Image (cartoon, rainbow, N blue to C red; front, side, top):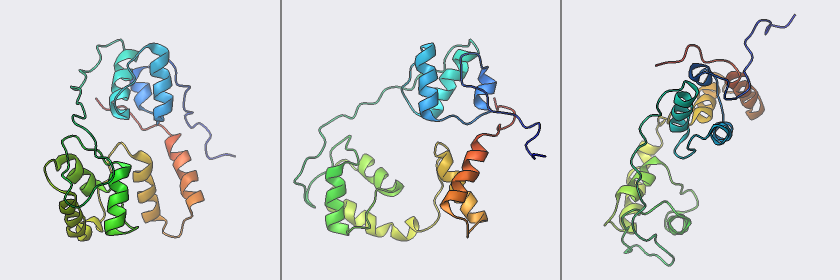
Length: 189
């Protein structure tokens, strides 16, 4: 006899769901976007914001206030860049910056949270300052970092591997699929 007898089954994602039922289950951004398109809900923003708009629409409530739009003011840096290049307002973590940092720091460079913050908030500072920031933050970056709630798969995999250090990627992904197909319990708020 199956141990899943009587277990709830994830419903089909449709306009017939209630907002509470929507939030009880895991949905990919692609699934949520398709439902939003189907029922005429704006699809922009992150997964959490889209989920809240869909929840409101499914319950017939007013949608939550949209956050103010921010523009990526200013021009993005273009190659060639050097250590004396000044980071402009609104600069993104671009391929131009990635190539520069890999040349200066080495192949181990990646845009972690600390570097993303430095670039986005570092207007007026130089790329040499950014390289110095990278080296100054490596000890802190080596410590376990909080994974944002929007990265559910990453959070699950970190926790699963901590509990199953000898587990394989295939086993972890199978556990993830089983986890995401279970209800989350009563919806909050």
